[in-house]
Structures are given as structure tokens and as C-alpha cells.
Image: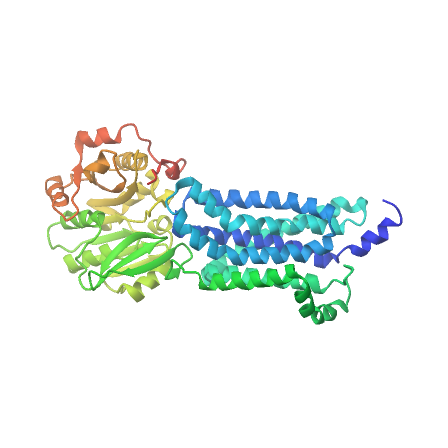
Amino acid sequence: MTKTDSPRVAARALSNRVAAGIVFLAAAAVLVLEVVALRLVGPYVGITLQTSSAVIGVSLAAIAYGAWVGGAFADRADPRRLLPRAFALAALATALTLPLVRWLGEVLRGTGVLGVLALAALAVFIPGALLSAITPIVVKLQLADVRRTGRVVGSLSSIGTLGGITATLVTGFVLVAALPSSTILLGLAGLLAVAAGLLWLLQRPDGQPSAAAPLARVRGLGSLLGRNRGAAGFAVLALTGAGLTSAVPTPCDVETAYQCARIVVDPDRPGGRTLLLNGAPHSYVDLNDPTYLQFGYIQWLGQVVDHVAAPGRPIRALHIGGGGFTLPGYVTATRPGSTNRVLELDGALVRLDEQRLGVTPGPNLSIVVGDARVSMTREAASTYDLVIGDAFGHLAVPWHLTTREFVTDIARVLRPGGVYALNVIDYPPDKLIRAELATIMAVFAHVALIAPNAALAGRTGSNFVLVASDAPLPDDLLGPGVATVPRPATLVDGDALLAYRGTAMILTDDYAPVDQLLGHP
């Protein structure tokens, strides 16, 4: 570096505070996009380990590619002019993310791993890459003296990491709980657009910072848009993106901290309501008749309720997962005087159920909002006649509720002779249901499996209901019961059940690869 070069480069550098602010904002915005992307793609491909891995992997790819491209452009063009353009393009890409995911998500629904990767790329890659290009541009501007290269690069890298950490915590703990994804994305796009405008206003036409530049820029904005087709085109695209984002159809009635929830009215049954979670049917409730059970696996669980104790005798039931509260309503209606306790992770879903599905906490229904694994540890031993597990969703299995340790805790809260009934969804080759069967058989002495014949033969995916107890099960009553409901199934026990289980693994807290075991439609 010559003596004549140093002052010229130094004059182009940003102030340390401005440079730090730019890098902090760019890095933070990438992590906001990553966290929100999980919520955007969930309604179409589910919230699974594969979905999370896809979003994280695509985000890292965007960061790597953006940093590489940003560094290359910073060496070829004036970094001062690149900064506002990078922010502006990132704002536009962020504004277009929601309509792209919402419209193409329906097309990619059910397309497997490739669909998950494609949807993750739509949600994150382009805006993430544009934002990641900003840090090397700022580094190029700040390298006024090669003797300070390490300090400049190290400090800006540290600030970028701090921005990512801050954004992750604020988005996960505050923004997602308080705002819809559309509002978060529009707000982020607006913030990036403001940053682009400020960086543009703070430059003189020759690119040097100037106190008088902002006023001159504002006065020349109209003429600039008139002369510069690129600027005018960007303005049109930005407005179009914002309009599409606000007009795009949403698959949610309520976007909770965990899932997209929607309630659909059944046109063929006046009181019928279907609760969709992340786009998949989860519960059906008849507001006029709580004894009406629509889904096949709920009819099978209804038979378990009917035969868990003498007909009509009140029972104490613990429900792991509330959903639409179909089974608590059935227990109360068919066995007056019964008490139901529901462990439900999603408080916003509970509020939706109270508003739209007639759920009313009271003497016969208590609701505990929180993680079921944690809540279970606070339940007294030998308390319940029946524990019903229905927290597994379509392609979304909370692994910590599948393990031997958790099943052991369920056995602890059951009274002698009490019954544990668990709903599991699986698809051929049925590795998950066999592993869960092996896990429950490692804890309970008496176990039975309920499922349609086609699913037992491995020809189709289905709900499976596992029934377990420390006392002999009423197979002579339960078997004919599940065979005669509107959606009949077969009860398997004894040697046939051992043959079906085969050599399946037992799931433990140390090793429970449920996402890999779960088959896909």
C-alpha cells in the first residue's frame, strides 16, 4: 500500500459504529429468516428433524454462498454503492418470501425430501445469501490499514455472531410468540428497506459520506426514479411484493408458537368441526354431540374408554396432548362424574379450542399448558385409570415422548390395572410402530395393538393404537368392539404381536431416531 493510497481508502471507510450496525443488522436478519422459515414450511411438510435440518442446511449454504459472492463483488465494484443495493434486494426478497412459500407450498406438499429442501430454499436462500454478502463488503470498506486486518475482520465477525445470537433469542422467545410470520417478515423487509434508504441518502454522488447528502438525495428522488429504470423497477417490485404478502392466502386461523392451526366447518354435519394442525387433520369435534367420533383411531380409543372399567363407572383420565379435546369430551359424556386432566404444550391452541370448539375447563376438566414430559414428573403416582397418548402428529413425532423412560413414568402414574393407550401414525415399512411396540412391551406385561388389516400387512400407512397395562386386557371385549365400529380394525396380541414386533429396537432417551424410523406417505 502506498502513501497516496492510504488516505483515499481511509476516506471511504465507514465509521466503526455504522459498520458494526450494518453487520449486526445483516447477520441478525439471516437468523430471523431461519427461525421464521421453520414456521412457514411447517403447514406443508410438517415440523420434523428433516425439516429443521433442511432449513438449517439451506441457511448455512446461503451464508457461505453470500459471503463468497459478496467478497468477489466487493473487489470488483465500489463497496459503498454495493451496500444500499444489497440491502434493497434483500428487502425485496424477504417481502416475496411469504407469497412464494404459501403458493408453492401447496404444490410441494407431500413430495418428500426434495419438496422439503425446495421449500426451505424458497424461504431462506435468496434473502439469506444477499444479507450474507453484506459483511465482506463492509470488511472491504474498513480495511484502511493492512496492519489492522485481523482486528477489523475479527471484530466484525464477532459483531455478526452477536447479531445472530440476539436475533435467534428475540425471535424464538418474543417475536414468534407475539406476531404472525407475515408481520415478522413484512417488518423485517421494511427495516431492511429503511437501511438501504439511509445508506443511499448518506452518500454523495461520488460515494463520499456527507452531511448535506440526505437533503440533496431526497430532492432528487423523483427525478432519479424518472431517469433510472432500475430504481423505478425496484420500487414497483417492492410494492408488488408487499401487496402479495398482505394478500396471500394463509392456511392458519391461528399461528401459534408451535404450529399453524385452522378449524374447518363440516358442511354435512351442523356441529362438525375439523381441527387442522400444520395442514393435517388432527381432531374432529361435534359441538352438538360429544359422543360422535369421526376418525377411525378415535373410535378405537373410544372402545378403550368403554372397556377400561365397568360400564358407566367414572374414571380418572390423563390425556397427553389436547388437540381438539375430542376424547375428554367423550369421557365426560359417556361416564358422568369422570375427571380429565390434559397436558397440552400449546397454550394458544387451548385458547382457540375454548373460543371455537366449546372447551370449558372446570371440575371435570383441568388443563396443564407445558411440555408433557416435564408436566408428567409432577403427577402423583397411582392416580389415573387411563392415560391416553395423542401428541403425535402427521410426520411430527416428539421423540422424548416415545422412550422407555417416559413410558416408565406413565406406568408410575397409573393405578393398578390402569391402561395406557397410545396413538401412533406410521407408514410402510412400519419401523416406528414396531419400535414403539417393543418399547412399551419392555415396560408393561400386557400389550395389544389395534390397526386395520391393510396397515398390519404393510400395504398402507395408518393410525395404530397401542394398549398396555400391568393387568390382563379385556381382549374378549375390546377385540369385537374395534371390529364393529364404523371404521373397523383388528386387535393383535399374544404370539401374533410378538411376530409383528420382530427384532425392533427399544427407544431410549439415549437413542430414539424416530424421524428416521417414521415411514413417509
